[in-house]
Image (cartoon, rainbow, N blue to C red; front, side):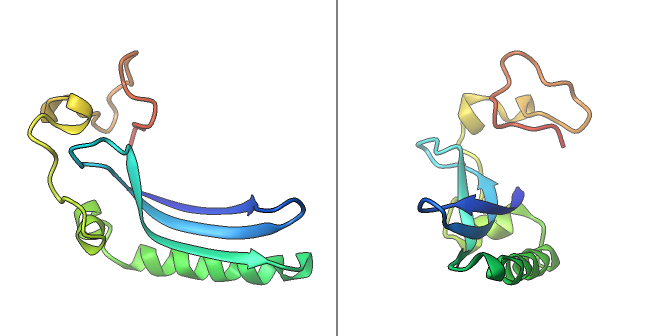
Length: 114
């Protein structure tokens, strides 16, 4: 599970503040991940960027007060709350990366050490 807060370019010369809760995909078709809750605020005037960023930060803080269980967020978004039988990305479930485990050469790029 990941929380995201960023300032992004939209149209040339335009900015937006985006925030999201993201969980790993356990669909039969691997989508890698899903944004399960999203905040986006377009910035029409650069002077309004601090206000937009504050609104994104407040939304992020609200998410952090919610359960930090990825299955909670998957259920909220109507996604599968259990991995497919073959495991994530075809790995057996006991092959998942664990905290402190070094990442090997065959570890998918989107799997990060906890």
